[in-house]
Amino acid sequence: MTEGVAGDATEQLSDTVALWRLGAVPASDVVDAAVECLVADVDSPALRELAGQSPSESRFILDPLIDQALDELGVDRLVLENPQRAALTAVLRRHKRGELSAAAAAKWAHSYIGHLGDARCQVFVDFDDMYETVNYASYTAADLDEWMSEESDAFLAGLASPGRTRVWRSP
Image 1 (cartoon, rainbow, N blue to C red):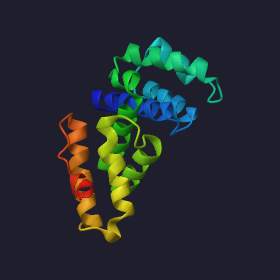
Image 2 (cartoon, rainbow, N blue to C red; image 1 turned 135 degrees about the vertical axis):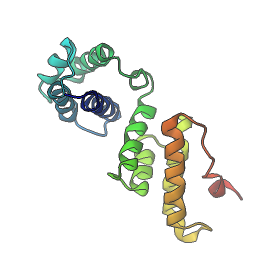
Image 3 (cartoon, helix red, strand yellow; image 1 turned 180 degrees about the vertical axis):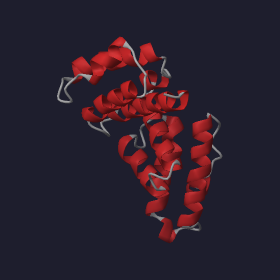
Image 4 (cartoon, one colour; image 1 turned 45 degrees about the vertical axis):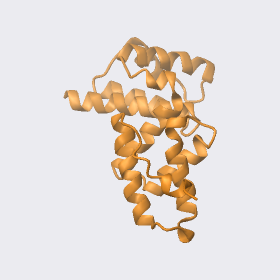
């Protein structure tokens, strides 16, 4: 298999774990992602064990096994250290691939991160509020889609927010 396929499978596992940690996907998705890694010639002892787990296995069993598998694969520590940012990264990747609309990505952020969540994620939570009130605003849904794309690009690149939601916060 090519490095690209292996890298894609590892990234998918990382994204799936991040979403699972916030309760946005079932454990079966994590087990399936582990199996896909093995199919893509990504291998480690903990990954093989994870791929063989029952999706109904206790979170107390799965969580340390997942951490061990990610560690063995050298997956980004963000998944372990900041599940909200890691899960939002997964959602924004899906948005950028065209699998989720900008509005759906913002709604996800509002539902799973909320206004009291990680500060770096708040711009996407605010976008959901902006989509909800677009009919009464000085901007359009098309503006919001474009701004979400810009904010997503910045977030995924690790850059500062362009501040597109300031228009909503202005008096």
